[in-house]
Image (cartoon, rainbow, N blue to C red; front, side, top):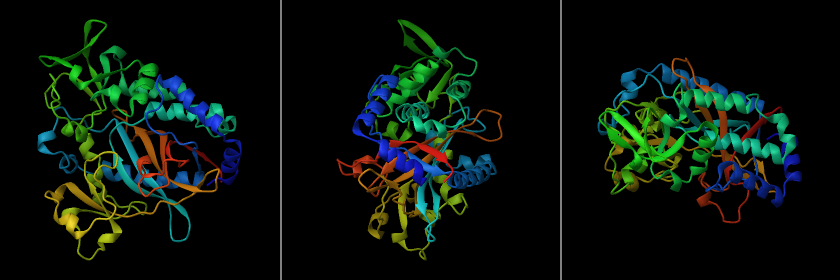
Length: 394
């Protein structure tokens, strides 16, 4: 989308440089990325960045104007965790990169979450690309690494000793995002700890480190309820719904409150029309919509082509939405002359007491299939997988 940078990158690209990127990320994370990393970043114009900012500012304002009671309706009673907070610590918004009927490139809202994502990995991916392709340094964001990790440290650790802060996950070393956990540990000193390893004494939580029990005072929560529900025979001393003396970063209730539950409530030209399935009007064309579960993660349960028969089999329609389809534009040219599509996630953090969240990074996912998931691509496809964005004048 910025021709001069796309052409220069494609001229300089070769398999050896791609291997250098993977090797550098492996060194920085201590493990080879368990997911596919795209060969290329995307180059987006400042005009497109302004459209993203316009949409995000509106979405954030609309959510801030919602009452605590309205947001609270999203939290199923059986999942409500005590000691909720006034706002989430994380806020991410996903947009498809699309074209309108006039051919203008514009974002279209896909979903939003108050859940952490690859804050460490994305920063190091961008750094690595700049190391392997030095011309990219002129497009690096103004925030330095020192400032970036200082902001994350302020959010996650606060004034505590890093050893009293844990990154909580279910079997963290088996997760596909584990490289981000290890980068976070290297940069901030926060250890990934499995939910099964947490010990509970009264209202206090502990984990074992070097043969001693260390109190947990803050939890960098990476446990996804959707996954927790699917876990059978998971034995833990600590239950999420226990009233314990710990600070959640971010509080689990926000997983539900900032989710697809909000899509039917948002109004913006870059937000496709959405309905709760229970409210889907007969005047709409079913083929124009995508069926999505409210609280699934990573695209699980999404149906791109719902039918009356499929909908009739849903036993709890209150847990689904219908979102108008958007068409991702094939804009990102690879070295063979083929084009990839992409979606972009804006990664915010939200310090307590601050009026609005702070944008930290961008996460991009590239694809040549209908779904933004590498499993749906041909095995020999390139320009697919995890990526990042660089912005400049078009």
